[in-house]
Length: 462
Image 1 (cartoon, one colour):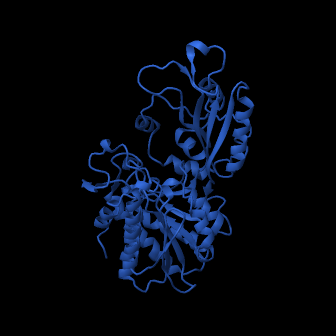
Image 2: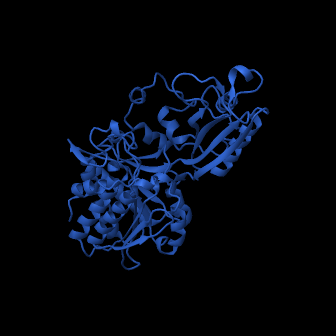
Image 3: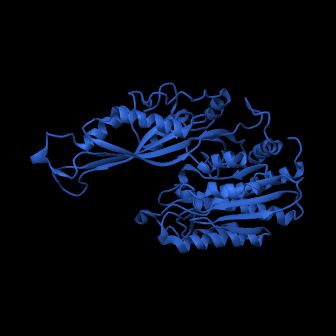
């Protein structure tokens, strides 16, 4: 058995920023590190090439009568910029108190190694464990997983024979309150570019005779929400399903007050859809957000120009039952109809992500055809988390998107058990990212118990 904390330090030292070709060596190092570690604990490891960064597929095989779990994770990380805001260098892991600091510590190297260490410890104790385990670890999650759907297509015959997917790429509110995520919002992204004149113009010589592209862009953007925060696009909410009473009950146990949340955000007041609390809005409702906007002179001082172009970057977070392509078409139509006719524009499509939801057993409307192993996995997770962390888990939808989860469901037919192991104070995607080592230790114990319980039940009824 390896030392999980030392292993995590070594993993973090490889600067595996997938989006930046300058970090090619770091990507290779992280990939080789995790592949070698899985080989050391007895897995058959295949490094599957993709057009960008390979996927690691590591298997512990066995008879078809054994349950089969896929454990997902990713070895790539976000860029560490701005570097000057880190207390210690981003890729030089440092333990301070109960936290290990470094880029990727919580997203996703720490949670991934939590499961690897649990498996290593379990197999050392139970080398004859009747459980098939496949690790599926990609290197492109932080850039939208562009190669992952094709990988799933290529390996579908092998992977779809599994019973479910276990992963920890979601969050929990506190160290003693773990969330099992049962829903993720989907995503559709696009850029809107507005053009006025063919070149920037002197605002004194030509101002007052044409519409400024920034003005046109602002006018259109302002129409996309009502005063109460609703998205003002006809048909946008048509497919949104009612929230189940059990979901509201679970969320009521979340434990954070609205005042605490507002203080955490640093805002004077919420701007929330009527009839929903801030916590409900982030989990149960779709959104349309402006992620970036620009046009004209951006430097110091003044430059009196009418810019030729202006742009905005837009994302829509979508909930279960909404189709990304349908929403994209509805928003495009609204923009087209509302755009002033004295400018031109183009819509630049970015990637989509499909919403995902799974209903845990013993909840309302649990699918009758749910895999018995999946149902048993939920119950095993409920028991293990309650025993190890001291409180039973909450079952909540999350506001974020993990597009590969919906891809796995669509292409392999497999549902996922998502055990949140990162916390709000872990600073994902920000300077001083860290991972709570107490959560790591407890997560190892919980993961080990979940897997051992699954093995004991075979592939029979839940």
